[in-house]
Image (cartoon, rainbow, N blue to C red; front, side):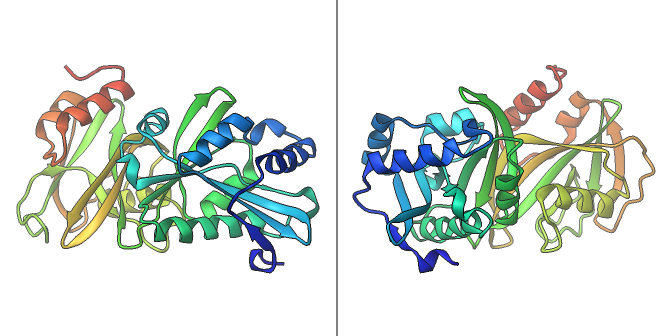
Length: 306
């Protein structure tokens, strides 16, 4: 059974019936707190401010529902996402009638929302999920969302997932490699196709089709450029938009922890050095706001930067 086989209602939603359906679904969940609990007043306010609800029916029986919520500066601040809120849409509660669990409706709803929001001109989608909700997490990952952050909200801890909707963007990663409180700097070759000069930087690269996640891309790029094996990766609250070689890019920041220094450079770099965080900040050629980088690393490493 497909979503397209069902009757979709997405205008003039009866809020009382929506809440009744949601509460029925929650009453059959092992962890009902995983599902949103917007009040009727909340829902009316959201819909009046650009949010939208879909309910899918088989005959007169509700099968599943999805929702988008207009992002705001406050929302992105709570999520620690540093993007223009007008470019971001939040995917709200998705739920499925327990009679129809296992038919792939949640993933189909993801695809419907992607198409709808992309046509509206949104560049990014964001969603939250309980870290133990493996079913929904698997659908986020399958739909190429990436785990961006984890935050504590009124309803408890939630993982925050982010996806690039704009199909013209190249998704990239940048990672800072750390060993025993030392940072690795790489000196690039002057044959760099974009900058044509040699300078100190760190590992960066594009996400490839072979990468199942951003973390996979980080591991692959670090291995290719340094021969190092990563033991632990942490997401940073760094995300950049820029243009490179005529292509629009979005770049996600990470910290990569290693325990060995058996470095073998590839053709992209000609030298390397381990340095403390202050020397790292001083030497790295940083094209974005370096004060922002200092702030992020200070928060991460307990204000080691002087």
